[in-house]
Image (tube, rainbow, N blue to C red; front, top):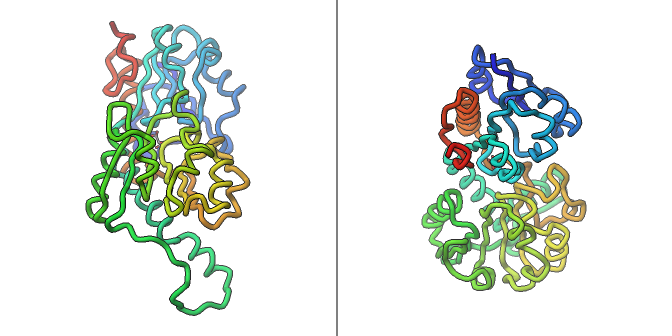
Length: 313
Ligand code: DGY
């Protein structure tokens, strides 16, 4: 039987799909990512790794795993945790789970947009303090979306699904991506809501930084459901505190799972723990997709979502 390491328990459907197919070494430790030394130890001798976005797969890990490793199947569409070039050099397949999480992530993006413009989390926190209040014309005012501009940074599947939903809110949509759209400077100056959907690369790290915040509208909202390091969190906290922008919604964090401390006492930021794909339906689809990729890779077949097809040529 092939040996595989699964770095965090998946939903039942996906765990069952592994039964009888391979010998599974399942990490069931505390909710933090598997400690690095344990990952290195347990990867050794495995034919396949089914990894989460929090596990770093690099040359050191590939050395520790050994030459029989055939595939790293990431339980995510993003694969910035994997050194793909190093895997390719060693003939190790890398697979991901695109498409199945597009709609769920676009929904969560809108949940954050609405929470930011209408101060939903702030209102909820306020009521829980049992502070006396009464309806008033000046109370907790937000901003309307109708007729405003949504700027999408990164116009792939999730960016486009997010854009589609803007029609229902009567918004104008502009976008900026590697392949086109408006210039980034135009987007940040004209948008009332900016939603980030670009992949994390050395070029996109801190794409949103202190300088960019000063060039956004003071009424603007920034939402990030892509990868944390695209936003300089400490600079964001300063911009939110100074009123340089109106609000922010974050699903992902620069040093995930840690959250920048200076964000925590700000009312104009809504924080959720990387929930973009967290629906019953999507997590089943992601898990089954990752397992399918893993089993195909181990069996010497081409995984359906192969990141580095050059390995097979
Ligand atoms: C991904 O798949 O890359 C998301 O961030 C987690 O669902």
